[in-house]
Amino acid sequence: MNDRLPHEKGFHVSWDQIHRDSRALAWRLDHQGPLEDGAWKAVVAITRGGMAPAMIVSRELDIRMVDTISVKSYQHQSQSEPVVIKSPDMDVVGDGTGVLIVDDLVDTGRTLEVVRKLMPKAHFATVYAKPKGKPMVNTYITEVSQDTWIFFPWDMALQYVEPYRGKD
Image 1 (cartoon, helix red, strand yellow):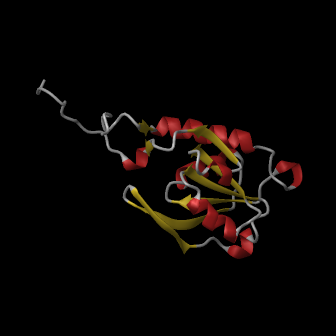
Image 2: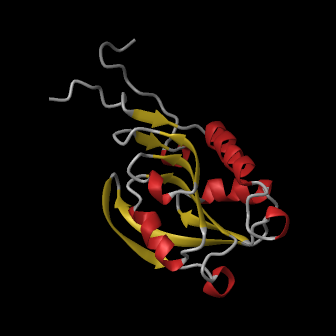
């Protein structure tokens, strides 16, 4: 039996928090690239969750070449087999040398595994990491437990919620 209330293993991330954590990710990646002066050639965001962090990282590191890869691995809150439904410009990213792959979260690592097959020399960076997926990531900011569900700001809306008891 689960004695936990539904919100107790949830980690709610605000827009301010994702911005701060994405900037921290950029700070860790600064001057770590394989190009001259530690630069990066491009950023590839894993859509959809990686788009906001990738935008912030690319801005902070002044990387103008930004592309996306779309991998579908979730149907609402249940994970399925990952499928690439849109690839980046492979003429630009090649084998991934000098490319930052950015996502919001690595959960099991299955999505990153699919992307790594396309760009094996890329550097994989996520804002949040769960234990099962950590081996697939080169750089991350915050580790959360495997059984925690992260509520990102793009998935949430501010609205009134009735209390469990009473109406006041």
